[in-house]
Length: 252
Image (cartoon, rainbow, N blue to C red; front, side, top):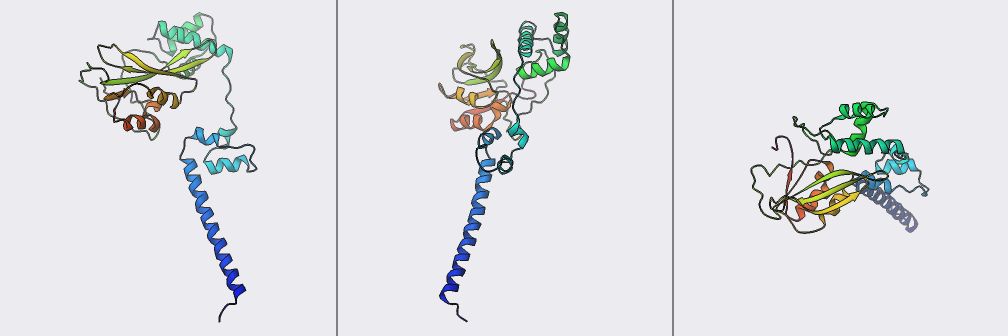
């Protein structure tokens, strides 16, 4: 039995709506997957508090926990900043002192502080006691590739043969900054600093920015820190054809 024109039109319209719904579902899924592939910091920036969509639903779509979106960082107090400055001064004068000895010294100076707090502040500043010890395997961020150490038994006697980079803590009048420096390890140049950047957040971007200057070395050597093993940092090196080397267990 043949359908009349109106019935056929209704069926065609229903099929079109169903097709559009399917395309919409697939499209939404695609954009959600794309959004979740970026770093959590960038995903948090996508949250629009003025949007009619509830924050909870935006967090669910972006794969974020609500607590991480609502959390407001507590600023470091003046007392802790003063304590961090004193710990840094002790570390610069006595770099072989660990948290236990630094705590003892602080207590003799009149500071009321326990060892756990000293450990926490030293970790926040990225400092630790310097002395010969059995090296524990340094773990980069989850999913980051560990590259081999290429400098063993290598004679470094030419400019742009080997570059290296490291991050250190810089105390300021209020708070502190992180400094990344890129150096040439040529023995004749005696560790010339080629580029540097400062940041108030220990992320990857300021390390990548420091790479955007000067020439191209044969080998780039760093530790296994998350900033240097990140895809953003290593991609710049790989695109320039630079061999990547990282300090690891047994590197000496």
